[in-house]
Amino acid sequence: MKRLTYPGAPPSVSIPHRHNTIAIAFIAGGFASALPTGLAHSQGYPSKYDFGATASEQDIAAVAMAIPADGKGLPPGKGDYAAGKTVYEATCAACHGTDLKGVAGLPDMPSGLALRLIGGRGTLASMNPESYWPYATTLFDYIRRAMPYSAPGSLSNDEVYAITAYILAEGNIIDKTTVIDAEALPKVQMPNRDGFIPDPRPDSSNSDRSSTRSMR
Image (tube, rainbow, N blue to C red):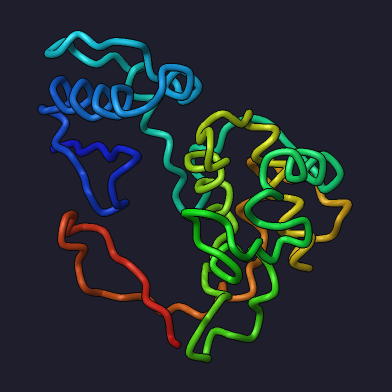
């Protein structure tokens, strides 16, 4: 049985293909109704849904946009440090700081290190690890789906690639001259790439998929 996953739910949650008619209308419709009209449109959701209508391939593609660790499905586009710095300063610095180390005391928002984007290397074995993710594709995926905080999904693919390049370069993971695109991003070697070992236990929602766990 073919299974589909949808953004907004944990990566482990999947929905049987035979239910995609109702699931797409319910999930996407719920997202759209919960968001301001302009924001819903920026994320690819139409202003209204016909409950029970069969979801087209285009409907599914508009919301099923999560990127796995291997980068499969990365969209066309590219970005570099210089372009990323410009976009970051305009859309990210207010929360994450001009130095990428967070802004303390933001109303109704996490503060300080909770919004920090760099500087965590070497902290994995500490009580407050800040250097965890083994794949750079995770950074791209999260930025594209969830950022900026006030208008998630509003950035173009080029802008997301550029911000990704900027953050990785500021963290001394890639060179500032590196151009990030669908081919280059999965090849980025994150500091904790080798900090995981295979976990043979089956995923509770998908028995044929293995997971990994940290060695910390």
